Length: 100
Image (tube, rainbow, N blue to C red; front, side, top):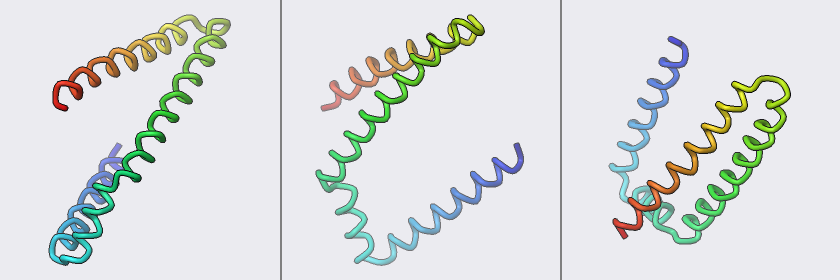
């Protein structure tokens, strides 16, 4: 666990250093803002997230079906994960729709 914690801390420190260097240089700050607010990039990210979640749900569902023959507890855990995914989706969607 110490290796993982060290890796996370080093990554966070590097992110802070990169952010500070962007804030100092006006040109890189403008490029970063354009990249973040570009609607095409946002749509690409949205489509990628949707496709990824569909693949994950299909994989979980197939694994749940196959695990029924091996271990029922594993199938129940996967069923719980699918339920958690859909509940979190509904909650997040309601929160976001209230904000917009």
